[in-house]
Length: 391
Ligand SMILES: [Zn+2]
Image 1 (cartoon, rainbow, N blue to C red):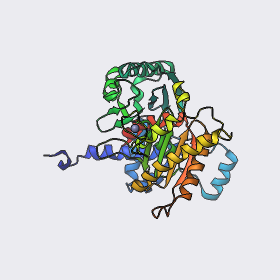
Image 2: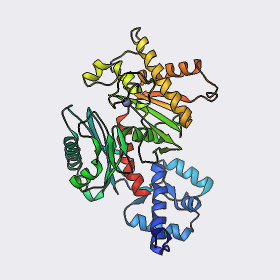
Image 3: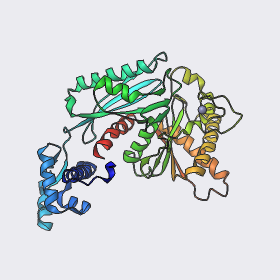
Image 4: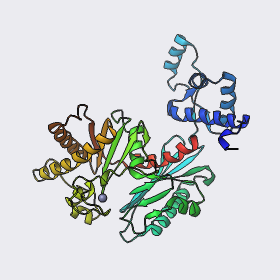
């Protein structure tokens, strides 16, 4: 009999409801949520919610929050409406998650508590001679060092989330292709790290975790349907669709940097011709050779920057037009070395697209630009673990 047709057991339902309640309390964040609000949100009966709250509290997963710290406000409020029900939040020390982001130049690692607060962050440089196995060894030693430094109990760590560069096959848990690190082709990094660390490892593309984190925590202007472009040592991108990281039916992420904008263009590191990445990286090869970011050190308001940013915006406009035709996202987010450079490229891209519209462009996407935020990237990687745990 297929597992999906098995009758549900009472214990399955209980576990499912407990996960559901824990997920709701977790998403309520620091402001917390009361039992009656969870009754309303779930439609479950009040005694069931009471039982689940008691079990979760006893297990140390959730805790009652202190009432208002301002006693005057609290007593005025009590006079108006009576006592407020107790709110609960997840206990920060109940669990921890490790987030990793890496690419050819760096490995960054963070540890986050169950409320999402960062308790550790560290970055290590990579040299261009490291191959895939060496990078795995380094990641494992950084994780062990972080656990040792923070003294977080290993059995409280839910897992390690990894935002990996290049094309990632999330379904098969592989880095499918990242030509900048030798040996990183169909590379089973999640399985390798699990055996080294003895912890569950969740893998996704680094742009996808950055994009999802920008959507969750980056501010209200980041919309639920968004393409992100990351200009760093190359160009990559990700699509967050209705708040979820988009995957192809084969389990792979999108390759925004390798959209061809000219069939006869320069040869790209991926082997194809005319990719967006090939055009953009050829504009700033000196920075990249030194291990810097694209356009690092460029004053976007200097006269010499004008032709560079105009050309970059032209290339990006072309890729954005293609992505718009295919997916119709409501916004694009350009992430670059600094807020100023990202915003200036976004502004010029918007201008170019508004000058050269086609009949398909009646609704124009919003194009935003901002600096790379390492804290958001690491939290996005750690969220891979939380999301899997609470799903
Ligand atoms: Zn390419």
